Length: 305
Image (cartoon, rainbow, N blue to C red; front, side, top):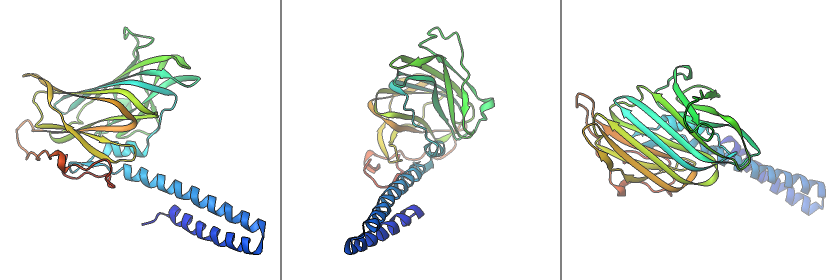
Protein backbone atom coordinates (compact mmCIF):
# COMPACT_ATOMS: atom_id res chain seq x y z
CA UNK A 1 0.00 0.00 0.00
CA UNK A 2 1.33 3.40 -0.95
CA UNK A 3 1.88 5.97 1.77
CA UNK A 4 0.45 9.48 1.54
CA UNK A 5 3.85 10.88 0.51
CA UNK A 6 4.19 8.30 -2.26
CA UNK A 7 0.68 9.10 -3.54
CA UNK A 8 1.42 12.82 -3.57
CA UNK A 9 4.68 12.15 -5.40
CA UNK A 10 2.86 10.13 -8.06
CA UNK A 11 0.20 12.80 -8.64
CA UNK A 12 2.82 15.56 -8.70
CA UNK A 13 4.78 13.65 -11.33
CA UNK A 14 1.68 13.21 -13.50
CA UNK A 15 0.65 16.84 -13.13
CA UNK A 16 4.19 18.05 -13.82
CA UNK A 17 4.41 15.95 -16.97
CA UNK A 18 1.05 17.29 -18.26
CA UNK A 19 2.02 20.90 -17.57
CA UNK A 20 5.39 20.35 -19.22
CA UNK A 21 3.77 19.02 -22.39
CA UNK A 22 1.29 21.90 -22.48
CA UNK A 23 4.08 24.41 -21.91
CA UNK A 24 6.20 22.95 -24.71
CA UNK A 25 3.29 22.82 -27.15
CA UNK A 26 2.22 26.39 -26.43
CA UNK A 27 5.79 27.65 -25.97
CA UNK A 28 5.03 29.08 -22.55
CA UNK A 29 8.22 29.25 -20.49
CA UNK A 30 6.44 29.98 -17.21
CA UNK A 31 4.27 26.89 -17.58
CA UNK A 32 7.31 24.74 -18.30
CA UNK A 33 9.07 26.17 -15.23
CA UNK A 34 6.10 25.31 -13.01
CA UNK A 35 6.12 21.76 -14.37
CA UNK A 36 9.82 21.40 -13.52
CA UNK A 37 9.05 22.52 -9.96
CA UNK A 38 6.33 19.85 -9.70
CA UNK A 39 8.65 17.13 -11.00
CA UNK A 40 11.48 18.08 -8.61
CA UNK A 41 9.02 18.19 -5.69
CA UNK A 42 7.72 14.76 -6.70
CA UNK A 43 11.22 13.29 -6.74
CA UNK A 44 12.11 14.76 -3.33
CA UNK A 45 8.81 13.62 -1.81
CA UNK A 46 9.29 10.13 -3.22
CA UNK A 47 12.80 9.87 -1.79
CA UNK A 48 11.60 11.06 1.61
CA UNK A 49 8.70 8.56 1.59
CA UNK A 50 11.06 5.71 0.68
CA UNK A 51 13.44 6.64 3.49
CA UNK A 52 10.63 6.73 6.06
CA UNK A 53 9.31 3.38 4.85
CA UNK A 54 12.76 1.82 5.29
CA UNK A 55 13.01 3.25 8.80
CA UNK A 56 9.65 1.72 9.75
CA UNK A 57 10.63 -1.62 8.23
CA UNK A 58 13.87 -1.46 10.20
CA UNK A 59 11.79 -1.19 13.38
CA UNK A 60 10.20 -4.62 12.79
CA UNK A 61 13.07 -6.97 13.53
CA UNK A 62 12.04 -10.41 14.80
CA UNK A 63 14.52 -13.23 15.47
CA UNK A 64 13.56 -16.80 16.40
CA UNK A 65 9.96 -15.69 16.83
CA UNK A 66 11.05 -13.04 19.34
CA UNK A 67 10.52 -9.37 18.61
CA UNK A 68 13.71 -7.44 19.33
CA UNK A 69 11.72 -4.65 20.96
CA UNK A 70 14.56 -2.58 22.39
CA UNK A 71 16.38 -2.55 19.03
CA UNK A 72 13.14 -1.73 17.18
CA UNK A 73 12.58 1.31 19.41
CA UNK A 74 16.25 2.29 19.07
CA UNK A 75 15.98 2.16 15.26
CA UNK A 76 13.07 4.62 15.31
CA UNK A 77 15.04 7.04 17.51
CA UNK A 78 18.47 6.46 16.02
CA UNK A 79 20.96 9.34 16.21
CA UNK A 80 24.08 9.17 14.04
CA UNK A 81 27.29 10.46 15.62
CA UNK A 82 29.23 12.43 12.98
CA UNK A 83 31.74 14.24 15.19
CA UNK A 84 33.73 11.20 16.37
CA UNK A 85 35.50 8.60 14.24
CA UNK A 86 35.49 5.20 15.94
CA UNK A 87 38.37 2.79 15.42
CA UNK A 88 38.00 0.20 18.19
CA UNK A 89 34.89 -1.09 19.99
CA UNK A 90 34.81 -3.56 22.87
CA UNK A 91 31.51 -4.72 24.41
CA UNK A 92 31.40 -7.05 27.42
CA UNK A 93 28.14 -8.54 28.72
CA UNK A 94 28.16 -10.52 31.98
CA UNK A 95 24.91 -12.39 32.66
CA UNK A 96 24.11 -13.73 36.12
CA UNK A 97 20.64 -15.20 36.34
CA UNK A 98 18.31 -12.39 35.25
CA UNK A 99 20.87 -9.60 35.72
CA UNK A 100 23.07 -8.05 33.03
CA UNK A 101 26.26 -6.04 33.59
CA UNK A 102 27.59 -4.24 30.52
CA UNK A 103 30.95 -2.65 29.88
CA UNK A 104 31.26 -0.66 26.65
CA UNK A 105 34.53 0.82 25.46
CA UNK A 106 35.08 3.03 22.39
CA UNK A 107 38.32 4.50 21.07
CA UNK A 108 39.06 6.78 18.14
CA UNK A 109 39.56 10.46 17.47
CA UNK A 110 37.58 13.66 17.05
CA UNK A 111 36.94 14.87 13.52
CA UNK A 112 34.96 17.97 14.47
CA UNK A 113 36.44 21.27 15.60
CA UNK A 114 35.20 20.56 19.12
CA UNK A 115 33.28 17.85 20.97
CA UNK A 116 32.30 17.77 24.64
CA UNK A 117 30.48 14.44 25.03
CA UNK A 118 29.81 11.03 23.49
CA UNK A 119 26.35 9.49 23.22
CA UNK A 120 25.44 5.86 23.98
CA UNK A 121 22.28 3.83 23.52
CA UNK A 122 21.17 1.59 26.41
CA UNK A 123 18.66 -0.93 25.06
CA UNK A 124 16.79 -3.54 27.09
CA UNK A 125 13.25 -4.92 27.19
CA UNK A 126 13.10 -4.31 30.96
CA UNK A 127 12.57 -0.60 31.44
CA UNK A 128 14.64 0.73 34.33
CA UNK A 129 14.02 4.47 34.95
CA UNK A 130 17.14 6.49 34.27
CA UNK A 131 17.08 7.90 37.81
CA UNK A 132 17.41 4.33 39.16
CA UNK A 133 19.97 3.20 36.60
CA UNK A 134 23.37 2.21 37.99
CA UNK A 135 25.53 3.64 35.24
CA UNK A 136 28.82 5.52 35.15
CA UNK A 137 31.73 6.13 32.79
CA UNK A 138 35.43 6.98 32.64
CA UNK A 139 37.31 9.23 30.26
CA UNK A 140 40.30 6.91 29.88
CA UNK A 141 42.29 9.34 27.74
CA UNK A 142 42.36 11.90 30.55
CA UNK A 143 41.87 9.50 33.46
CA UNK A 144 43.66 6.20 32.73
CA UNK A 145 43.64 5.33 36.45
CA UNK A 146 39.80 5.51 36.57
CA UNK A 147 39.74 7.85 39.57
CA UNK A 148 36.91 10.12 38.36
CA UNK A 149 33.50 8.54 37.75
CA UNK A 150 31.30 10.37 35.24
CA UNK A 151 27.53 10.21 35.61
CA UNK A 152 25.89 10.18 32.15
CA UNK A 153 23.07 12.56 31.21
CA UNK A 154 19.77 11.43 29.72
CA UNK A 155 19.19 12.69 26.16
CA UNK A 156 15.54 12.83 25.16
CA UNK A 157 12.85 10.61 26.66
CA UNK A 158 13.24 7.65 29.00
CA UNK A 159 12.18 4.12 28.03
CA UNK A 160 13.45 0.69 27.01
CA UNK A 161 15.87 2.43 24.63
CA UNK A 162 17.71 5.28 26.33
CA UNK A 163 20.06 7.79 24.74
CA UNK A 164 22.64 8.98 27.23
CA UNK A 165 25.58 11.35 26.90
CA UNK A 166 28.93 10.97 28.67
CA UNK A 167 30.78 14.32 28.96
CA UNK A 168 34.55 14.21 28.50
CA UNK A 169 36.66 15.48 31.38
CA UNK A 170 38.23 17.86 28.84
CA UNK A 171 36.73 18.95 25.52
CA UNK A 172 38.13 17.28 22.43
CA UNK A 173 39.70 19.26 19.61
CA UNK A 174 40.10 18.29 15.97
CA UNK A 175 42.09 15.05 15.46
CA UNK A 176 42.47 14.56 19.21
CA UNK A 177 42.29 10.88 20.33
CA UNK A 178 39.82 9.65 22.94
CA UNK A 179 38.91 6.49 24.82
CA UNK A 180 35.69 6.16 26.82
CA UNK A 181 34.46 3.31 29.01
CA UNK A 182 30.83 2.96 30.16
CA UNK A 183 29.64 0.51 32.83
CA UNK A 184 25.95 -0.19 33.32
CA UNK A 185 23.98 -2.68 35.47
CA UNK A 186 20.56 -3.80 34.25
CA UNK A 187 18.86 -6.10 36.80
CA UNK A 188 15.96 -8.33 35.81
CA UNK A 189 16.32 -8.01 32.03
CA UNK A 190 17.56 -11.53 31.17
CA UNK A 191 14.80 -14.09 31.56
CA UNK A 192 15.05 -17.87 31.25
CA UNK A 193 14.25 -19.41 27.87
CA UNK A 194 14.83 -17.50 24.65
CA UNK A 195 16.65 -14.20 25.22
CA UNK A 196 18.98 -11.81 23.39
CA UNK A 197 21.68 -9.18 23.76
CA UNK A 198 22.30 -6.41 21.22
CA UNK A 199 25.47 -4.53 20.31
CA UNK A 200 24.74 -1.46 18.19
CA UNK A 201 26.78 1.04 16.17
CA UNK A 202 25.53 4.38 14.87
CA UNK A 203 28.37 6.49 13.51
CA UNK A 204 28.70 8.67 10.42
CA UNK A 205 31.49 6.69 8.79
CA UNK A 206 31.65 3.69 6.45
CA UNK A 207 33.36 1.09 8.64
CA UNK A 208 34.64 0.49 12.17
CA UNK A 209 38.07 -1.11 12.07
CA UNK A 210 37.52 -3.66 14.83
CA UNK A 211 34.60 -4.64 17.08
CA UNK A 212 34.74 -7.30 19.81
CA UNK A 213 31.79 -8.60 21.83
CA UNK A 214 32.24 -10.89 24.83
CA UNK A 215 29.30 -12.72 26.43
CA UNK A 216 29.88 -14.41 29.79
CA UNK A 217 27.20 -16.59 31.40
CA UNK A 218 27.49 -17.44 35.11
CA UNK A 219 25.79 -20.40 36.75
CA UNK A 220 25.04 -22.49 33.69
CA UNK A 221 25.91 -22.68 30.03
CA UNK A 222 23.21 -21.73 27.49
CA UNK A 223 21.97 -24.50 25.20
CA UNK A 224 23.13 -22.47 22.19
CA UNK A 225 24.25 -18.97 21.22
CA UNK A 226 23.85 -17.56 17.71
CA UNK A 227 25.06 -14.29 16.21
CA UNK A 228 22.99 -12.24 13.74
CA UNK A 229 23.84 -9.08 11.86
CA UNK A 230 21.22 -6.38 11.42
CA UNK A 231 22.05 -3.81 8.74
CA UNK A 232 21.00 -0.17 8.68
CA UNK A 233 17.38 -0.64 7.55
CA UNK A 234 16.64 -3.83 9.46
CA UNK A 235 17.81 -6.48 6.99
CA UNK A 236 18.96 -9.27 9.25
CA UNK A 237 21.04 -12.37 8.52
CA UNK A 238 22.41 -15.24 10.51
CA UNK A 239 26.19 -15.13 10.89
CA UNK A 240 27.26 -18.15 12.90
CA UNK A 241 26.88 -20.37 15.95
CA UNK A 242 29.15 -19.25 18.77
CA UNK A 243 31.13 -21.79 20.76
CA UNK A 244 32.52 -21.10 24.25
CA UNK A 245 36.13 -19.94 24.28
CA UNK A 246 36.30 -20.50 28.05
CA UNK A 247 34.17 -22.97 29.99
CA UNK A 248 34.38 -24.16 33.57
CA UNK A 249 32.09 -24.83 36.53
CA UNK A 250 31.61 -21.13 37.25
CA UNK A 251 31.02 -19.57 33.83
CA UNK A 252 31.18 -19.92 30.07
CA UNK A 253 32.46 -17.16 27.78
CA UNK A 254 31.62 -16.56 24.11
CA UNK A 255 33.51 -14.19 21.84
CA UNK A 256 32.62 -12.53 18.54
CA UNK A 257 35.13 -10.36 16.67
CA UNK A 258 34.46 -8.43 13.46
CA UNK A 259 36.84 -6.48 11.24
CA UNK A 260 35.68 -3.55 9.09
CA UNK A 261 32.15 -3.67 10.48
CA UNK A 262 29.46 -1.40 9.02
CA UNK A 263 29.30 1.71 11.19
CA UNK A 264 25.48 1.81 11.20
CA UNK A 265 24.54 -1.73 12.13
CA UNK A 266 23.79 -4.05 15.03
CA UNK A 267 24.79 -7.50 16.19
CA UNK A 268 22.05 -9.57 17.87
CA UNK A 269 23.12 -12.47 20.07
CA UNK A 270 20.26 -14.91 20.61
CA UNK A 271 20.53 -17.70 23.19
CA UNK A 272 18.44 -20.15 25.15
CA UNK A 273 18.87 -20.90 28.85
CA UNK A 274 16.88 -23.30 31.00
CA UNK A 275 15.10 -21.93 34.07
CA UNK A 276 16.48 -22.71 37.50
CA UNK A 277 13.87 -25.49 37.77
CA UNK A 278 14.96 -26.90 34.42
CA UNK A 279 11.47 -26.55 32.97
CA UNK A 280 10.60 -25.10 29.58
CA UNK A 281 10.77 -26.53 26.09
CA UNK A 282 14.00 -25.78 24.30
CA UNK A 283 13.61 -24.42 20.73
CA UNK A 284 15.66 -26.19 18.11
CA UNK A 285 18.61 -24.12 16.90
CA UNK A 286 18.10 -23.78 13.11
CA UNK A 287 20.72 -24.56 10.54
CA UNK A 288 22.60 -22.00 8.48
CA UNK A 289 20.64 -22.99 5.39
CA UNK A 290 17.40 -21.90 7.05
CA UNK A 291 18.56 -18.34 7.63
CA UNK A 292 17.75 -15.56 5.17
CA UNK A 293 20.55 -13.65 3.54
CA UNK A 294 21.22 -9.93 3.56
CA UNK A 295 19.59 -9.66 0.16
CA UNK A 296 16.18 -10.81 1.39
CA UNK A 297 13.43 -8.23 1.02
CA UNK A 298 11.98 -8.92 4.47
CA UNK A 299 13.66 -7.55 7.57
CA UNK A 300 11.86 -10.09 9.71
CA UNK A 301 13.34 -13.47 10.65
CA UNK A 302 10.88 -15.97 12.04
CA UNK A 303 11.69 -19.23 13.82
CA UNK A 304 15.15 -19.85 12.42
CA UNK A 305 17.96 -18.34 14.49
